[in-house]
Image (cartoon, rainbow, N blue to C red):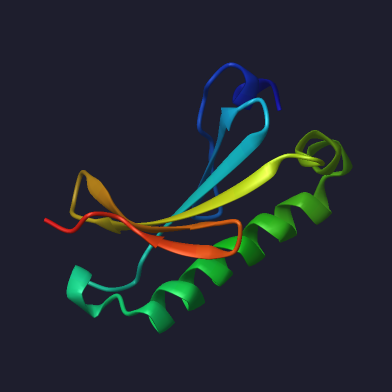
Length: 103
């Protein structure tokens, strides 16, 4: 929790967690697709759900972390990794799928 409060973004089990502001936690993960055109709505929702499941396992394994994130909004983000970098494909905000602008 101290890492998040300091602005660090720890990577745990393939997901990156960051505190976007005092009321929001953002959890980021990568798609298994190699091309952005292959990330359909069905694939995106499935992979965002997998990211959420990892996040929930983390919460359930740490009472302190569970208390820390209680009453904070959750934003899930799906990225396409392109080697040393990556770009946002879509987000799940308030259970609504939001696509990022495609290049």
